[in-house]
Amino acid sequence: MAQSDIMKYTKVKRGKIYIGDAREVYPQIAEENQVIITDPPYNIGIKYENYNDKLSESEYRSLFYPFVNHKAAIIQYPEDTIRYIIPELGIPNRILAWCYNSNISRQYRLISIFNTEPSFNNSKIPYKNPKDKRIRKLIEGGSKGTRCYDWFSDIQIVKNVSKEKIMKKENGKNVPVHPCQIPVKLMQRLIALCSNKDEVIVDPFLGVGATAIAAESMGREWIGIEFSKKYCNLSIERVKNWEKYVDFDFLETLTY
Image (cartoon, rainbow, N blue to C red; front, side, top):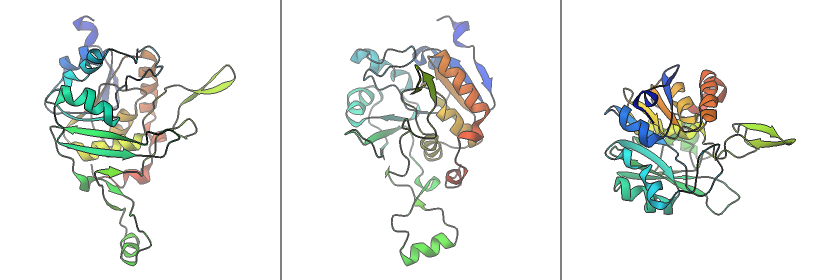
């Protein structure tokens, strides 16, 4: 890809979207005031619009090499975090566990945080014992919850039946537009935990724009990189109407 092509982007509200391969684009736009927050492809053969999700081990690991020494929060399954991400980026400063209900055996993913420490007070999670007399008083006094822990289960994955899921008609059936849509709430929480107000949020694997919507809802500058023009266009439209995809009650549980 030529230099001039890499540097082309679409400006959308507070952010920019680049179409291209993150390995080529990110090194040319990387700056110190950025924090990478991303849910990358998992290399397990998922059918994306125009991306091969079955790379060789070395090629898949190369997706993460441009992020060396950068602040980052990267979502992946436990075994693959150890196999692919840690060998490229080193030992994380902190690992969080995102737990959720699912009809498959894998019911949590790791969030590896590199080169920064999460601020757990910046995100509230629901009290575990809301009927406790002391907790009831806190809730009556306006408390939104307790500080976030290094594992949480109050944010569910986006399933095909989820309100957040983008669907389309295909041969008379509703099918997902993107196979691995990530919850906006999760990206909002990670932005609150892992970044400062003056830092730019970067998602090198933007998909259909959850990270961009999260950053936009929090008044933050952001950059997205996405290989698929189709997903880029969907992200642009979603960011333009970001209020439709945000739970404002959840937003009140964050400090940002």
